[in-house]
Length: 104
Image (cartoon, rainbow, N blue to C red; front, side, top):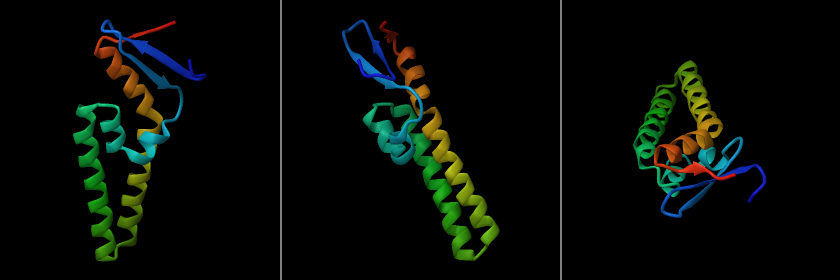
């Protein structure tokens, strides 16, 4: 077993590792990470938030409003950090809802 990770198994003999701590793939890749982890219910909200935050930043940039651009950029960074901090926790919760149990 990998150090710093938890192994989960379900009744069908499938296994999944979940790393502890910050999720760099969730931070950088977001919706692609959700596809890779087969978490389809996360894909749509992640895509919507990515598009919405990018559109807000682009609109603020086009209009030349520095304060709005700073606010939109701060919101984007906060969202990226949120994905990184909670990505592995969301993955654990999703696996447990699907019937996976922690293997000692």
